[in-house]
Length: 464
Image 1 (spheres, rainbow, N blue to C red):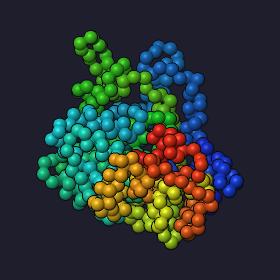
Image 2: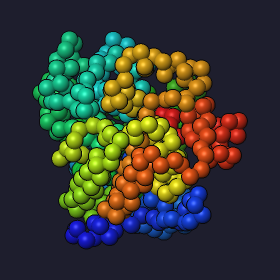
Image 3: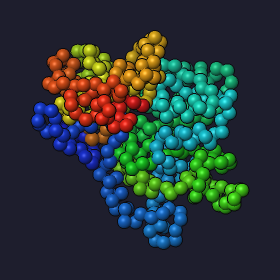
Image 4: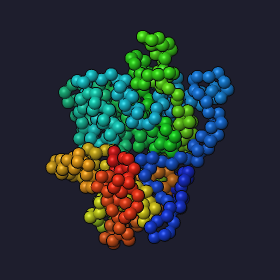
């Protein structure tokens, strides 16, 4: 991929790129999505695969008719593709369980491990809530702490693994959704295995950018972060982990025989997929896997590095902007999380949207413990925020702004974004009045819907 191509366009177009978006100055600008770390639009090949499959949609594993057989074949082909994507040979000892997303996958595994209250799971303070909360309600946790930049070392992980009783599991992210930092995951997996500790890798952020770590015992990821936003995610792990005991979900498709007082569960992976499967999501996921394979990981990594470097350099050169996390790490995703001195994070995001047609994420990014460490908040400040939220007041919620790029992002997009941030950080007053809704913490144009009692239920951009 040439520099010219990276500057002029991204690596591949996405459905919905450049939609016209009306701004408050009366001009329409092409919408620029810099929120790929949350969700990505579909690759055209994914949308086309779904469109071509729709006439053949039918029940999976439940019919002898042609459409049902075609749907079943498509679903099982997606399962095989997911195993290959995770570096597992088809016909091997691992299974791919198709679920909704990474959060459901980790909850699924947490249930199926049959943890006792005295069991220990080692995880890190840098995790997404999806890799914190499921363990919190089942067992004890032992944490790997991070430094002020938000990173930790292999030695930090091994110290947690070696502290007291051997843990049942190491549950760790393959890439941070806040800083984009990629820990040395392969070496960490090896260190855990030397101690006979199995490893779950949360690969939600990594899946669209790098090959998945094939050495992990369990790996979970989501289609909606890798250009297949049709509601499918995957949990891959050893077949033996799902052979005994009750499945996470109970219902049709997971059984061989059912009586009023007993049940004979079927074999995995069907045992773990009660109900009618999301064959549309599976088809989309398969198409995304094929499309990313066609582009190639080398090209994607080269694109990521160019975007990541331009993004970090541009932001760090803006007076008043502080970028959180390590300084331009070699192993990082194309995203940056930052604060603007004197401007609340929610207002920065609102102004980028309304004045510049740029969509970003703000808040704590479903990683509250990690972000308060990156922000350097002391215990008193954290306690004050907890008290305010308990009383329904989110106007001073801690947070930051995150810009995250994807496969369609160009260097020109980053330059446009940096110019908009520089404008906001310059101290120039906003051209219109913004009002903050203290219930959600978000800012809205004065008089626009979404404030006070008119807000949609749960419509805080920063919650999570």
